[in-house]
Length: 260
Image (cartoon, rainbow, N blue to C red):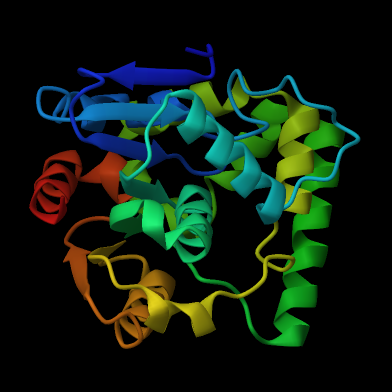
């Protein structure tokens, strides 16, 4: 197995694949996945540009279509066909994109703090400009300074109640290659992603939508998504913000157990 993919459990068990968020790595899911390793074959890849998955060409375009090609190759190499799929934030956007394009490969889908995309043109342009500026900040100021600034966003305010976890998350994030992080935030910006709202009604497998009660933006998003996904449920996790699985690991684990 590639050094950019961590696996737990027996390969003959049902496959359970986790996709991490921006600045993370497959190992961001290690503690959660460990709870499932007796009954599932847990697959924790580093998304392109993250962790050890930095062997590609920096000059090559990075978009959700070639991200899906990477994902399909990963599944074929393991090899697994149908999977239980879990994604957080950027990993959730990636998971939803894959599920909409390859529904025949999905057993169930769990999305944590994930958005199907931005529809409004001016909002898309604003987000592209914002993420371009963030990319420039990474290259100018370095990873440590950017990570400090990133986790000061209101989205992550509740992580301050978990100082040890926040410190570990920031330390791990700072080890990412700044050139790749700049590329990822610029080229996988939500402002450039094709919105998936019109595809939600076609999803037929079970979908669990998770958000923290303190993450007002994504509370609104998941309720709107649930109105369009036929076989879906919403779970609002108390005392959690954007990163539910880090802030409330036991509650997240229980929700995931009920969904797969």
